[in-house]
Amino acid sequence: MQAIEFKATAYQHTISIPSTIPDGATFRVLLLLDDVTEKIQPQPDLKKLLAHLTDNLTEADLQRSDELARIIEWDI
Image 1 (cartoon, rainbow, N blue to C red):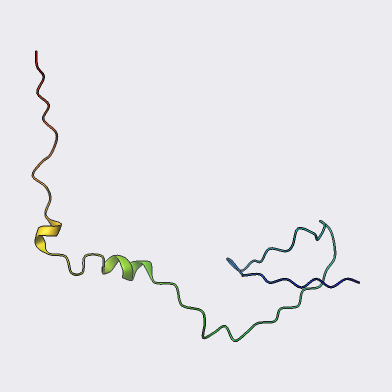
Image 2 (cartoon, helix red, strand yellow):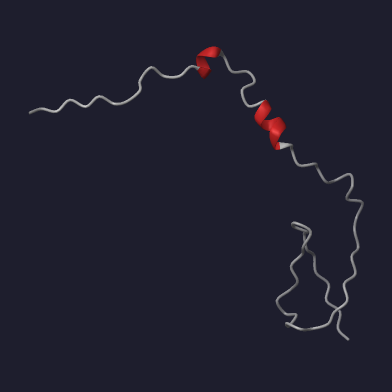
């Protein structure tokens, strides 16, 4: 039996194993976690971020430009 120790970060509830472990190999996984409940920051809620998108903007910032299109004059 061999023992391999490696560090990994979970991403979308998955971890990558080292490429040295061949396909079809049977192995045992032992997870040792630090107290991660205090370290993990919650993901910001997208709806709340979008709701506060225009905070601190003035009416002048939100006005549409009067220019609707470029006017091109041709020298003929």
